[in-house]
Amino acid sequence: MRIPQQRAFTLVEVIVVISVLALLAGIALPMLGTTTNDARVAKLVATVDQLRKACQRHHGDTRQYAIEQTGATGAVKHSLSAPQQAEGWRGPYLDHALSAADNPFESFVHVHDELDVNRGGFDLDGNGDLDLRGRGNVAIFGNVDEESAQRIDAALDRGIPGDWNETGRVQWRRNTLFVLLYVEGTAPPRAPQGG
Ligand SMILES: [Ca+2]
Ligand SMILES: [Ca+2]
Image 1 (cartoon, rainbow, N blue to C red):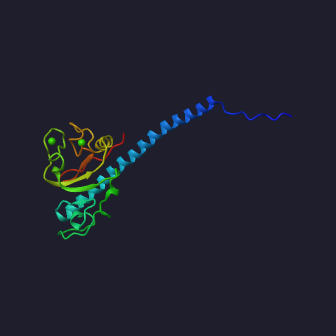
Image 2: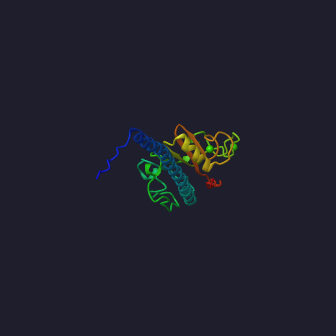
Image 3: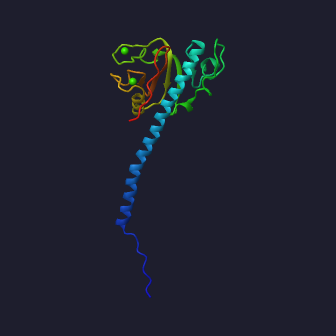
């Protein structure tokens, strides 16, 4: 009886298999990248919401705008998370000191108490005139790439005319993202909508 011979793969078959695997990897890897970026954008938008509520409560209790800075030492630079002398302070308003772990783009994040940190204020309706300036809370995130910044802008500034990176509540320049958090008497940013 003849034992059937094990047939070896031909070179053409090996090339076909490698090509298919390469094609699948080519499809899957960008999708993985998009998912990671989706998660970062969503996390940043959620962090903004959390910081906005914390700043609002802080201001409601103390009539002062909070300061909270990644990497800063001393309670003065952590008025949302560390006990303060300020009259009326009833925090902590964040359950931990703000740190680089709170920036999904792996850099600093600060809560600032002046609105002029980037363009001198905020042009909320995109007509070219600054509507908010002076005291107020802004979040500053480092290392945010342009594409992600545009998606964050689309979530918080949908439909505001003018250059997306200069108008509305979200501004962006040189990989740094500036987001208006809270000013007394102004409405919070609109919640992100589906689609
Ligand atoms: Ca305006
Ligand atoms: Ca904007």
